[in-house]
Image (tube, rainbow, N blue to C red; front, side, top):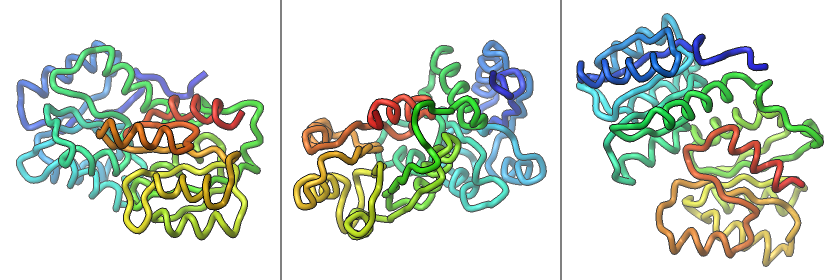
Length: 264
């Protein structure tokens, strides 16, 4: 049983439009959320969070004083707020605008308008993130599992590490690009590689090819976590030897199911 349920979530909703604020509050109430505080700008939201960290922050993309990207990055650089889950609700669709949000580690990105099913799913992802006991993996010796996490974004690395820690995986090494990861992997033994695709020096695809072709290691599972939208590039990644692929943002439950599959 989860120690937290949706009715117990404390949510801070940052939305400059009074109409949208009421609509989202109504949808959250229909989902069973009882505690929602609404604010209209990022500065005030950060001040409130400092005093009373919520269980979840939901924000529009464009606020009067900052963007959601600036808001979530401010949270991720604040020790008090860096672990607070973040959800974006926005009509923005451009990759360049959304990718920094994905890289910062969010539980969900919902469109405007969103449907109630998507909201419920995002709230469940929040519960799974907050409540590690919901994420236990059985039949796998997690304490001895050695994982290499590769991502050029420090916030993304932190987010991935936190999700893996919640699963019970504690033996984690990080690298900020494929070249560093290749050097680390060549000199050590790992049971799993979790890597981003788009990185400087050596990207995730080149890292996979290095491990599979140059080192000849066909057995270590490689999980590619990416926000890439290009279908051709994704097809090349799938054929390169990855064990599984996962979108950013990812749900903890999705990661759990993927790990069960690839580690077996």
